[in-house]
Length: 98
Length: 173
Image 1 (cartoon, each protein chain N blue to C red):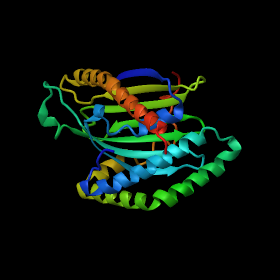
Image 2 (cartoon, rainbow over the protein chains, first blue to last red):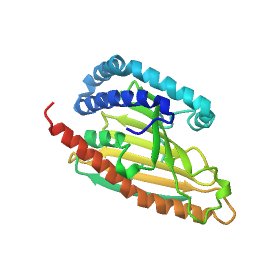
Image 3 (tube, each protein chain N blue to C red):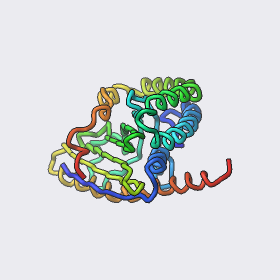
Image 4 (spheres, rainbow over the protein chains, first blue to last red):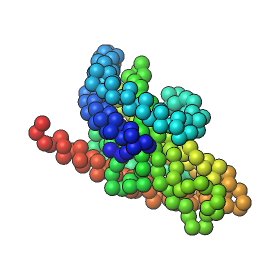
């Protein structure tokens, strides 16, 4: 796993990445075979599992990176760039037709 | 503005290619990636996973570029992705945060499962320079040329990770 932008956050990042990756692998494979009726319950179940297994380290890691970003002045530039997760609304025209 | 797009078919199915794509750093083909952090991640009510990552890459400026305009040859990138396991689609959009006047690079990557259970990757990139001084075209052309060179390396990186995942799945637990 690559380093964190701040060396002090790298150990937290490594723990988080390991936890997330294991969760993600276990999430993707079964998810693709769920029927529409099963999906909501499955998503909820996996979200709870993530919270239980990785929730604490995710919170700590996120806080560490946020502090590092504040200290480096990166926060402003970033906020501007992502006032909204642009994929939450599918990009118009750009991804259509290929 | 310069535009380039390319499609590529992986023999593996969508879940494993998507996993490899998210695990791709670090790999020997991406030694220019200095850091990579997840800064937000959430599951949406429809069951997709939204992730924002902040990535620091080492760049290399062409020799003819007037160095005084760029503070350093490193670049912060924001990568926003949506993984939809039910639709079997990954969408990923990456753009640079700094030096956007010199060169703005926006890359869109999609992974979709095909009917034969293979995975189709489609990549689009738009490169725009607002630099002026007669260099705009040259900067954009340089950006596209570099991008074409790098896309091959980036794919080799994903292939390498794919191999590692396959291997680890063969090991008894």
